[in-house]
Image (cartoon, rainbow, N blue to C red; front, top):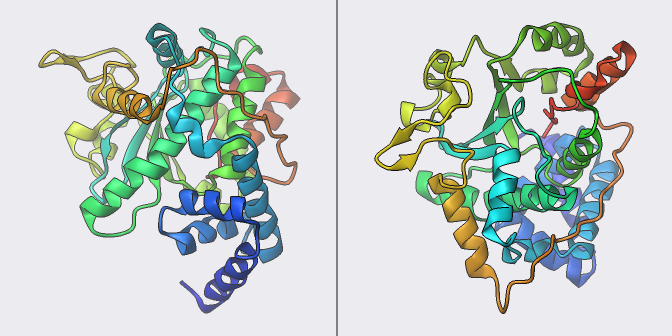
Length: 328
């Protein structure tokens, strides 16, 4: 880390130490023993501008306190049928680890319908995934591999992507904004697989509009991406849709369990749901955990925002908003 970067972190840390006690407490829960690395993420997201990073951190801490984010892993989505419906329509899961120890997060962009529950359930589930990643998965990986691991890799399956209904734009924008403002710089690389022709066409237009730092994170792979992904992860960690050409997002069974990491029956989701139920104290109350929906910042550059601008100009904004690749 360069001297200028170290100075910026030192300045930001001094500013953060002045916040009120509730903000200090949630910051401790957020950084999980790695405050320097956490502050560096916020600085990186604001091009190492200390004032802008300070505002971003304080806004994030206030959001966490006001919305009781520290308690969200003790708020299971019940009954289980409702949670299964969320999982079946918000396709995301963890398939394993890269050879460097980074968690591999798989996202079914093209086949996620987000239409089986209210928006608040999808937002709750998304934040729970983020918090479980940051409080459980990444600390476990850090301990296992003997070095700090604070990011993941994402494999985005574009199977089924099409320019269609506009009805999920608001929800996707909310989720993207929550990530941009409160979980910045958490993804090391995005691998896009099973991309239809329409995506490739739009990507050629959007790519030059992005900053070099963001462009370097995105790799569009041929077909299901199996050969390229095997360079960075073992076969066992490949998402199910990348295990063989033409597999799409279908389910593959093995030894009585599903290899589909999107499914609630997958080991990762079983561990996550069991963890949340274990954290719950007292009777479980039905109903979603409401979180304030933040407004997107106009000067925050994301891959998604550039696709959206392109889509609006060309009447294609509907499915382009499904391409939620934020600069995190």
